[in-house]
Image 1 (cartoon, one colour):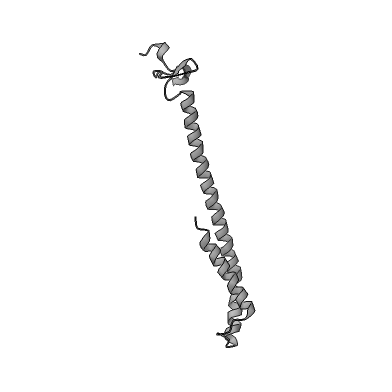
Image 2 (cartoon, rainbow, N blue to C red):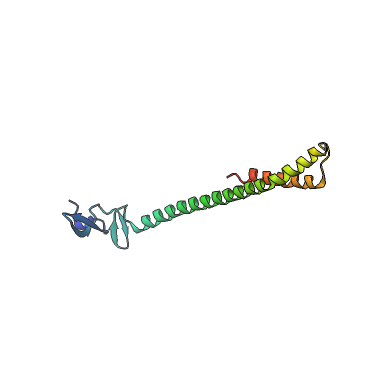
Length: 128
């Protein structure tokens, strides 16, 4: 058994036979900080570095999820805009076909085509 003076300074809880008690961690202290010996698992500076790294990874993951959600919302909105525009476009093209103006595109049809192309570009540009 490791002498008490060389053991980690961290107090840990152990439960045996339904009874909890606190004692010093059994690992050998290898890192000296604040006048105490700590094992690598419980050394305050190593714990702080570990938590900062973990939090940075979580923050990066959260921000990536947020960017994906914003892009998804934009794609859904562009899709809804395209669906809302579809009956209007079909009506304009039907009128053009009915009047045998397939080669002629009216100003309102040009506007519809420009809006449709803008929606399609928005759909293409938001992929993560």
